[in-house]
Amino acid sequence: MGRPKQFIREEVLQKALPLFWEKGISATTVQDLEAATGVNKSGLYSEFENKEDIFLASLRYYLENRGGEAILTAEPKGWDNIQRLLETILTCFAGERGCFAVNSMRDAKLLPARGLEMIAEKNANLRRLIIANIRIEAPSADPGYLADLILTFFSGLCVEQNMAPAEASIRRKIQNFMRVIGQSV
Image (cartoon, rainbow, N blue to C red):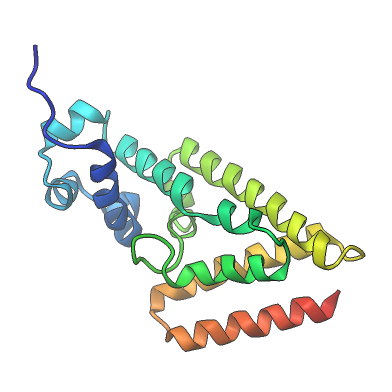
């Protein structure tokens, strides 16, 4: 019988996530993960198959806990929900800025296929929820077109977050974008 593990899986993922967020999957080493999580290599590999598996588990954890679905299903539905979703990039998860999924997509060629599938599935769900919010505010608009525009704007802001712009600048861009979206319908 092996030794009982001395760590909690969720805590390992919470500590690994910022590391993958900052460095990406290719630049993150097992030594980095050991240092960030406080769990040695053999402990990590007793829970996860390899670095890729730790990344996928971190991505899954993030996608399940980032909160976009909760924001977009809040009542009343409408533009306020969409604006609140956009504003999540200011402190999206555990104080990080931007979006881990968007940052990960920058390394699309290096990501495991399952990682790309998970991101695509979540984005499709967000798109569906954004469309539901648009239909409340602008029933005559093309909700798919606007949803695609919103998701593209969101991704652009997430990438821009890597340059650490002032929060006021991001808030202003979001407000201006929402004004344009509202006027275009």
